[in-house]
Length: 386
Image (cartoon, rainbow, N blue to C red; front, side, top):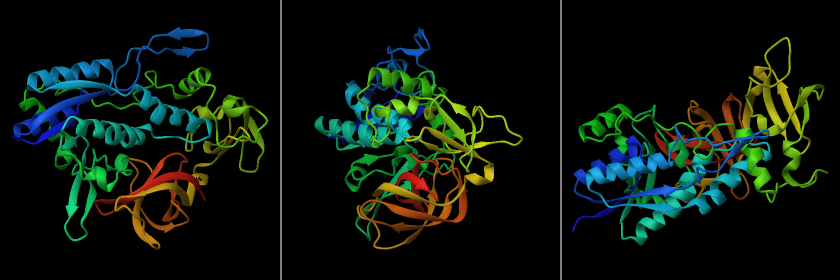
């Protein structure tokens, strides 16, 4: 009797090829798609409401149709699991709250952590599968000397997705496989074509799946009107709850001098240049946002350089952190060139990361991931910089 493996099928080229590849190898493959978001929900622009058809992202109704079509072609059992409530609680709600707190979140990491490798992994085992496979460009290896699983970069540097998987645990790594980690994207598309998959030319998803218009600030405003119960960590401001973050405020320079005004800090992110709304004799960039005081601080490009950052909510792939400072290559964005750094663990699950060379636009709410060559050591969430 062949080993049963569940494939997380999103309807894209990668997950579809994963399913075909595993079936070719003789596994009993079952396809599962996650229904994560109600795409009939409306977005508003002022008083105007409009229905926006979902496209260019993952997990839409059209994507689930594509996944079902591929499964039928491959003669695989296929099911759709509804995780909408969990997705809103674990991904969408924290996304909005982070913007209100002046951060720039990465919902894809939380989706991997809570949806794919928690809820979907549990569902896979409930139906008797031994493994969950996804189309991520990453690799898992078991180190015989340490007795630990290791998370490694994908072979294709242009598609490596290990950055988004830094919160994985030893238990999860022991129960998942990434069949595409050894291949390039070009090779995968050719494989999909050779398997006869109709979606082999389908474009990759690029944007946040639950914001069809890709207008993040408008989504935050609309969602807040629907969910006034959202609370921020700092309730000291005179305005009630999170409403202060979507209120107008001042744009100031590093000296605190007022240069202009804004319509809410959720319109801004560190490193932003366009759309600031202040005329000056030189280019200005967002240096930081201050949710408590509704301030957007701007300055020159060189003012974005930071010697280090404070990270919290750390996860160490080995299951426990180092006893002292360690040397790593630190990546502060997915496509950021890893920079030499020293990680100095602090109390609990936090650490100070000191760069060998100052890095540009260190952004609260983003992730910092630590590498040793191709191996992911761990990572955390950026709380601040200095």
